[in-house]
Length: 508
Ligand code: SF4
Image 1: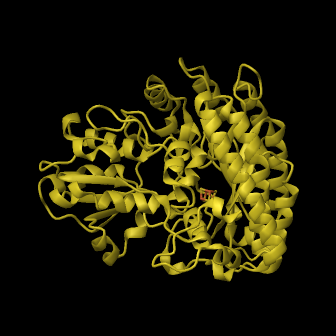
Image 2: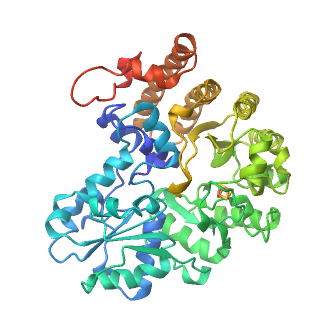
Image 3: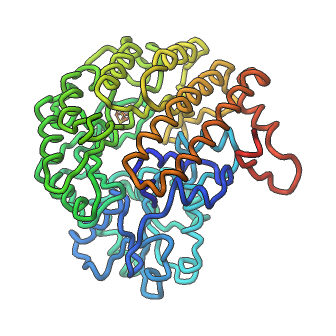
């Protein structure tokens, strides 16, 4: 549970292999724990956890019966009276695309997996044995009975938790046996209660679901729901009171208020204006948006930039959000993500991406984009097309994160590093080069807006990492013909019982 100094995209750092940089540096400069209250509760918690907390109150639990506990202070929260512990897990076993990509290439165990194991093995949980209910976006990773038993999980909730949390927690409190797996139904807007405590980085949900239907995405995304403005403003208020600027969360913030896949310009502009004008709001962030929405509604991008006064001395520097490029191959776009390109044709996808980046860059939006390596049916030619697309994006201020394709239905298999071709290796290096190029500037700009005491430390860590990455990229091209895995294997220290990861400074 970290706020990443307010930069939610540093959350990708949780997917890093533990040991790559010293823990003290990691937990001070990249992922410091959230603040805690005297009673051991967390001051800020994941939006999902806050929604479950609200669902429990809605069901009839009293505030004195529930605590959103800070993982570092469980001694204040867990004791002989504790009946049930709920965990919100995004990627508990590290199967998610960013984590599996990092750890397959670099080896070791990711921080998110390490932290999951730490909590289920916590001495107080072992001693008092409360029931454990695990939900969140990564709950599917514990569907397997053997894994559930190995980690002592009593019940896994896959899907949305609001409708099932109350009854399940009540059963646990009464000491009744819990069903090992529960599929949480999709809740209607009326069934999703308002949060009562602030969220990490002030995240506020404006819409849930997506409906574009990419075949690598979770099925729960199919039902699209929009929260009314008044509801959103109430959650903004909870966060503003706690000193957090809001980050508007939806799979595509630009589709707020849309009936179908076209942008509803008026609704999006209303959303940003009303939130920005809300008393106490000094800035607004977003979590995700879709490139086809940006390309199809350049006027909205421009208008939002005006509302937030992006790039102006008295406004925000830029607006950054996560988005999916996934591929530069029209064939793969047609096969796997036809809906993502709408209202354009899937065949036009690479042009849609370039057009969107152009519009965004002109208006001080900074995309943090993902790419999927190894989409089923992908050929070397498809990877070459994606590489060409990344090269065309070179001059747009952005971050591009390449990841192996992972389906959250384990029967559909994984893409593993040993299936990488030379072009895939080149693609990885091109993305990392792109990111190293922009990371220094983005950090410099971002740090101007936050604590100057911290700025020096974070800046040195980023510059140091960028220079190390550039050296590795050069070496991988010159000495290893873009074979990243071979290079990593050669650079790892040999011998010893457990092969620890080399720290970055040993590699250069
Ligand atoms: S556009 Fe994004 S959220 Fe929507 S289905 Fe595709 S991957 Fe999922």
